[in-house]
Amino acid sequence: MIILIPTNDMQAVKSVATTPDIWERFSDAVYAEDYEPTDTEREQWLLVCHGNHIVGLIYVYCITSVSLEIHPYLLKSHRKYGREMMRLFYDWYLSEVPGEHQKINAVIPCCFQSVINFAKKVGFKTEGVNRKSYFYQGQYFDQEYLGITRDEVCNVVIR
Image (cartoon, rainbow, N blue to C red; front, side):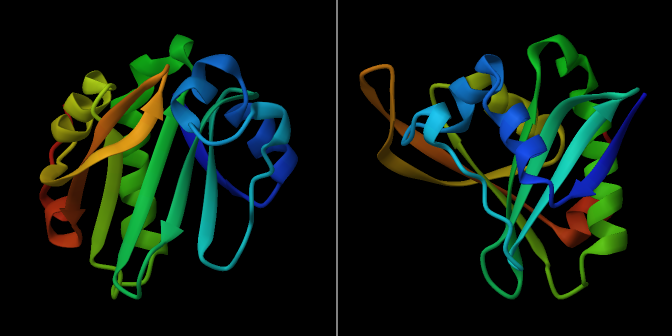
């Protein structure tokens, strides 16, 4: 069983974000040792905890007055909890995020096809592509834009 814990402890966020199996999908623009997470009124960090251990995190950013962007991450050893993490995130979103926020977006590099497939399994729909906008391992990749509305979150069934 996992739980989500909202946090403003940026040291905890940094320690999880810079673990090698999360960092490889976390940033293409900065070295891990130079990364400093931010904590502003437009941002929320949720720690994903299993027992007394932090096993992942979800970054939530308020893009506009009606839309959010999320970036969820789990340690490879705990990816089996992905669906549970998203169920808990959707519960948090519906209970803690004001109703005017009608949309959740995710931008996923196309080189991570398994992540795109996972997002679709938990209700996200493809909305577009940002071509050649992500640099990874010496290559440029497209990024897929996916989204889910508040109404869709209310009706999504995660198996």
